[in-house]
Length: 157
Ligand code: TYD
Image (tube, rainbow, N blue to C red):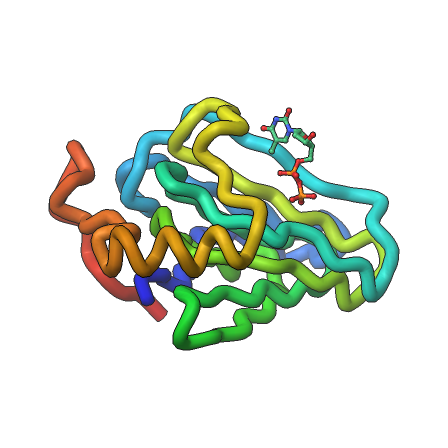
């Protein structure tokens, strides 16, 4: 299952009251160029969202405020990644099914995506997803070699 947990570059201040700053440089810190950014906010605790896979989109997910569980599966294996710090990022290759659970009121989910919004590249039914994985197999998860920038290091802490 192709995903990476990445340490997003973060700057802190000696004066804690000033807060922190996290930044991401496309094609350096994540293996794709960013075409779209969106965020989900004002979501209440225990709400579930997602329930879809993308055929084309690479995505970086991070939570600058709060705690959100991201559940990912390729139809066989399943992982839960808890985004509980602004510096923790999750890179999802295309082809993975994801669900998100808000563990705390008002947690914010930020997403950087490699593609513009296109409802056609979503799979929104889990049965359809399993069928898609049967047909396309592991090719559903694009390889880093297909990334124009290439040369991205595979794993970080
Ligand atoms: P959706 O991806 O279904 O969010 P979730 O799976 O977390 O519930 O998006 C919700 C709605 O927002 C849907 O009608 C499509 C729209 N939308 C856009 O128009 N552009 C976007 O970039 C995104 C992410 C969603």
